[in-house]
Length: 103
Image (cartoon, rainbow, N blue to C red; front, side, top):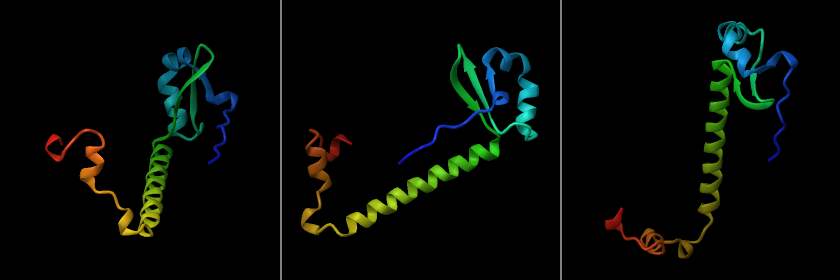
C-alpha cells in the first residue's frame, strides 16, 4: 500500500512557539475552515498536526472500515482452509508454554 506524504501550505506550518502564543486564533482558523490543518514544528521538525474534529472522525471511520475489510478478507481466506489444517487453541498456547489455567 502506498501513501502520499501530506502537503502543507506555508500558512499551515506553524512553530510550537507561535501555537502557544496564538492558540485560540489558530484553533478558530481551523474551526472556521480558514485552514484545513495545522502542522506544528519544533526545532524545524514536524511534531504534530491539528485537524478539525470532523476530519479526525472521518479518518477514524476510514481506519475502522479498513480494519473490518482486513478481518473480512482473513475470514474469507480461512473459509477455504481444510478442517484437517485447523490448529487447536490448546496446541497454540502449549507452544508458548501455557495452558488454559494460565489464562
